Image 1 (cartoon, rainbow, N blue to C red):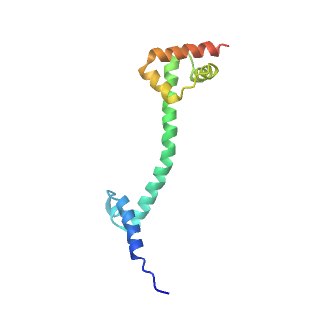
Image 2: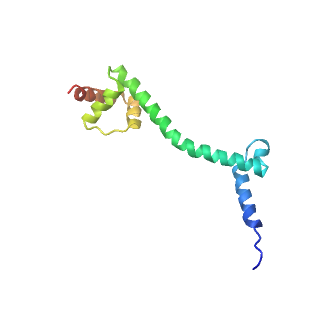
Image 3: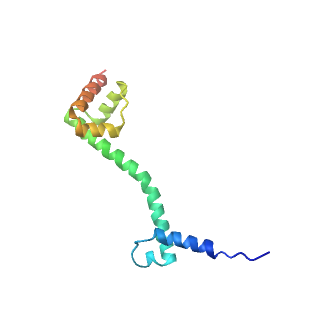
Length: 119
């Protein structure tokens, strides 16, 4: 059986790592072992933080909605409960945008939520 040379595959693997490590400081951008560690860690962080980003934005939207509803004399949880009882199906991102840019429409939703929350 003939001997298999793996130079092409291994070079391709190394080039992929070094390409991903471009711009890293010092040996992390040039040395294959340091670059491999740095790139693998970066991939792990980016995978994790794609999930974390979603959590962070949801927290931000909730904080904005809470601030806007409290100005109208209602807590966030009662507001969301009132909307649910009124069968209003708007996501938190949209509610947050409305609280910032369209106060009148948001205040109508708050009034609707107050009405259904009292029941």
